[in-house]
Length: 244
Ligand code: FPP
Image 1 (cartoon, rainbow, N blue to C red):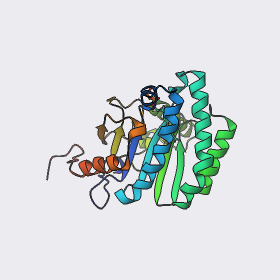
Image 2: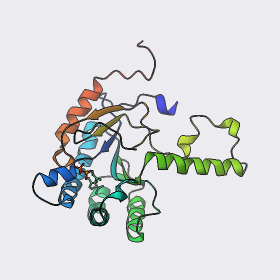
Image 3: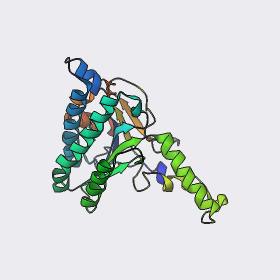
Image 4: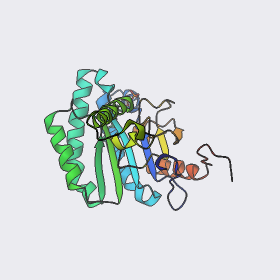
């Protein structure tokens, strides 16, 4: 069953890690710098983390870059983040491709500007044969929004006679989610000391293990990721069953 199979790397570490990269603003403020300075530092961390994945047995890495709620930030911060995403994609495409990283985006593209969408499409297309690490970037993503969009498409299939309501079970909805080609996350990490999931991968993380750590995202290192993977390996994931 898709959602309930424990998925581990050969050494017992997580196969799919999802990260809520929080704390960029506080990191910048602590240095007397504008919030965008922190986002730029955060973007540099992404490269180190992606590069660490193969050694740690992490095949899937999903990162939360911009939520459906982040539009509530100031116009300056939103525009700065959008410009950072465009720059990141233009600058990192070659390195990601050379490392065999396959990049996907999840989230609703309707509010994103055409130039950014073009770059996203191109990065997905250019890396689509890669298989070393599957990097998924959640951009204008919200778990509730994703479930609502999925439900709408499911309802359209019912209305058009392609789907019988009697056949709808918990295997059906995931096929309509943005993440339909990905396994469920095994480990969800949130940096910056906040212990909430903020609308990230709501359906997919039903049985994930969680790590809430104090480190601010721009200070997060591959070494810390290694430590979290090791501690994941020591956890007993029972998926509702009793120990054998
Ligand atoms: C949350 O920190 C972070 C974000 C809303 C943006 C995440 C973006 C990045 C790490 C930058 C680049 C990502 C890619 C894929 C290039 P916050 O601003 O809420 O921090 P705070 O809680 O300290 O204010």
